[in-house]
Length: 465
Image 1 (spheres, rainbow, N blue to C red):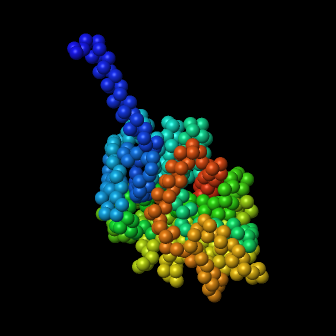
Image 2 (image 1 turned 30 degrees about the horizontal axis):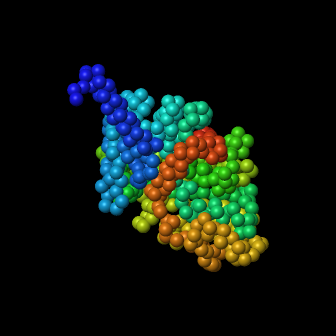
Image 3 (image 1 turned 90 degrees about the vertical axis):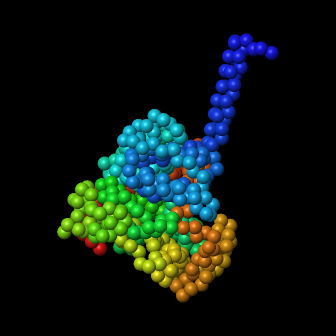
């Protein structure tokens, strides 16, 4: 049968519509499409170390041309080509000076991942949530008190635009910390949280990090700007973000913190880590200090980085101290380490990660003077803990008890990025986060940025520890 031109046109139009509908259907099978914005930190790649159900395998990358974006793409390629459980990411890359405007105009995805140079991150966040994108941002979201209000406004904008703004708090997924929190919620063992004093805080968290480190099987190449506190942020507003978050998360679980009423800074201080030019070359692959770092170079060859800091403050009347120290390289067999104590009226919960623990975080339950029957309480409490963490046991030692943690829970820091990303995807699917998350992010960044202001004014600041 011969078709008239009119009928042929109608059939062709119907076929095109059907194809477009099919394409649209295929695209909509993935609820979430990732965009990576200006990746300059290896944390951006770690978000993609695993695949996620409901997330499109094509990721759109927008960045200025240069070594940072290439290092990111090389890490993704490494995940795609590894022998064990390779990923299947496809990176669609745009490189250009107008990368931010291009991303906002293209709207190729609905979830923007940010992990890189922190100097502009708060601006990136503000513009991205303002354009209606969800944002998963590496810490810190803000590195100065002058930009704190901008971040606070971004959370209000996100709520107005019905998108979720969330930061990557990996330390909540470290098993010894999770168990410290779990045992602190068992009054038969822990008692109640002490109030403490500035000299003897109720909660202390100390973190030691290293510039020279192994990530995903190779020595990490850091961008030179990572050592510039005007771009990366000082240590007191960077790694301490995790520690302040854990203080809130453990001491007042699932409770909203009001930064204007609940937080009072007592003292803060900062000091530098010194780095030789040869050490700088080893981690950046650059032969000289760039011009923007020369302001921090003394004696022509020693770079001084304000990567260390300590904050003493009260949270709802509870005295807390958090501190971060950056060394150049860890001792043989060691890595980044964490120390934490929560002081209870009945027992202290202590995480140690030194040579005695073979540099593995280990949780201890240590009775305080005059404490009640901890042994009997543990028999009652342990089944409750095991409901959430099957296989966890306790072992009697001279100072109290060591919490014995099965190997299956010891995933390592890199795996925690997948945990955070999955939690965020769950929030996206639900269309909301728990009510306490946003006020507690605001409270956390208020604490760190105000502490930096206080430390800069402090006469007790030290050049090197």
